Image (tube, rainbow, N blue to C red):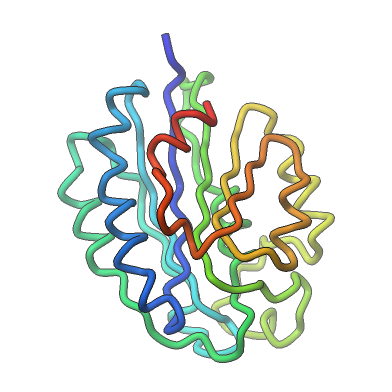
Length: 202
């Protein structure tokens, strides 16, 4: 029997993603029903991220987990409401989104539940520990202060998988070397079959 799986979609929703966001949203909306053909009792969470150093109030937005298919309409509404805006400089708060995804709750009694984190971005990320980011009043205090610390946190999660759709730049090229991680140099996943990639990672 396949494991129960949580899928966390981390989506860059800054202004530069405008031309690509429609493609990413289309891919995200194709995930639930196709995933139920491969996976037992999937749950889906959406994390939209921008830049804590630009507009702190909407730098990161986190949905609850949605059970599929029971809460499919709620998931679809959340994805549909993602809008490209803001972002400030080129680098964004993608590492913070990744850290928040790793902190997602796991239901008691589901030892076989695996988490798959999928991150879409067209930009590099601010380094963890950047004082301009961390001084934002909405910055989550539990986020590690370095990429090494985030890597250590990930290495403890041997059953989980990380899929990165991002440009070939720091920190994504470094994260590509982490265990149980697949890196797809691309325009935020444009032209790739996201669901097939998730299923293959299991």
